[in-house]
Length: 87
Image (cartoon, rainbow, N blue to C red; front, side, top):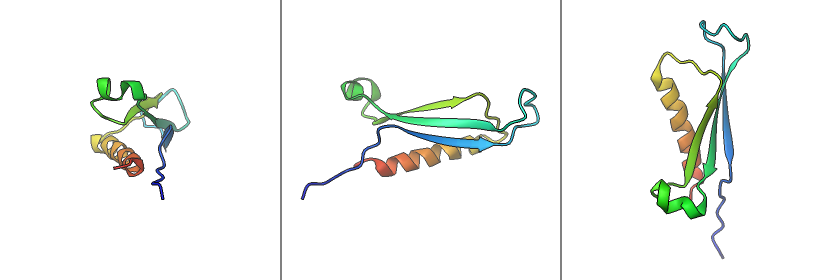
């Protein structure tokens, strides 16, 4: 039987947090989106060095007072995407 693999086409991870005390522009929450898109096949080896995905970060404002908070989010996304890659 042929090996059937699930491949990511595009996935978006959404994170939400309360506004920080310096955020005077909004009373609503702060949102962070991390979009994961596959590398186009024609560009796969030339520009990406063999990487399968590009990671895009989108936010109006995402404040943090400990850089490890952001690193942990990025590691979480990487872990979830890596589980989907065919090894």
